[in-house]
Length: 136
Image 1 (tube, helix red, strand yellow):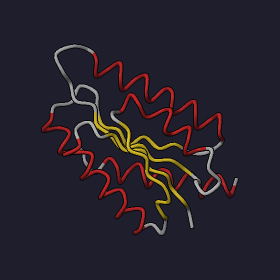
Image 2: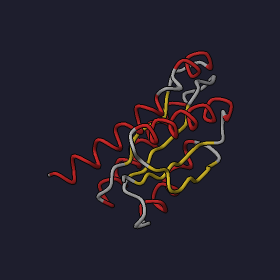
Image 3: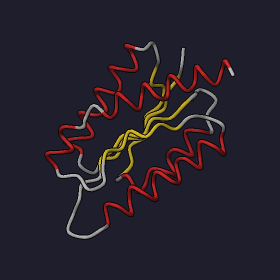
Image 4: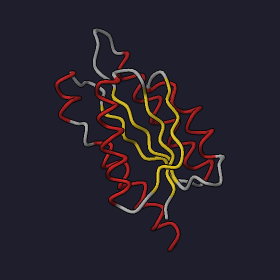
């Protein structure tokens, strides 16, 4: 059984809560188990939590769950770009998949609600990559 860690942003919790539930349901559907979950204040805070989960032997892959909604500045772009870059680096450093279940940037709240299924896509990507790396 593939063991997943979830890192979930509390910011925009009305959206990330739904994303988390869909992600958990999809993990179960795929025969994977969510063994650990770390809540973080926001998407920008994810890399440290991802790193912590990647150190555990009972984690095969990490799934990030969050959304970055556009504000009046370019802050959303910085948050999304820097976070995605760092979690990609962590996957390479630890030799474990880190799936991007973060929607945004340049997204309205309505867009974010339409994209709650991104967490399912991230879970699926994590599970597929673990299986494919085992066979490599």
